[in-house]
Image (cartoon, rainbow, N blue to C red; front, side, top):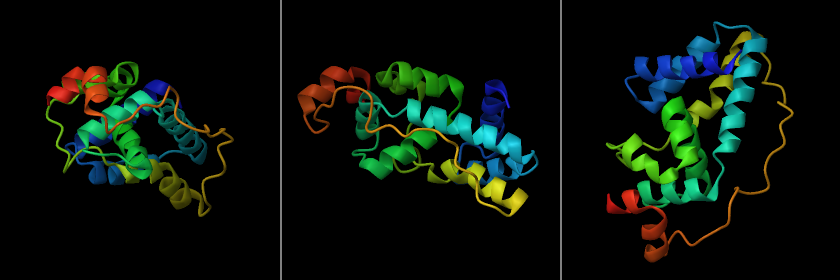
Length: 168
């Protein structure tokens, strides 16, 4: 599976689900279950690579602002949600987290930012296809987020780092 195929699956399932993360996860499992087990493993690797790429302190700060707090698990689910928004939003947010103010102008902290089930779609599809759990992807997990830590609870720091998000 190529990266373009990965993003096409993300976009098609998001559109079919009309943006609902739970429905998108269900649609993604259905679509992945139509592929070969090797393609599902490829999808899982591509998803995990993006999940790890978004493990950045600066992006965590943006998630903290958008969701009025983002402990470890919430940030994991936020990164799944971010992938589910498609390539343009994902790449824009990873490159400049404050751009989320423009990339997702109608962000609703009650409805958006949590797509935990998207992170398990490949696991579910692989198990449905083979009856076995998804094998280890052989990808090293980072020790911590990339970037220097800062205090997410300091209004002065947050306003300076994320002026557009802070304004919201």
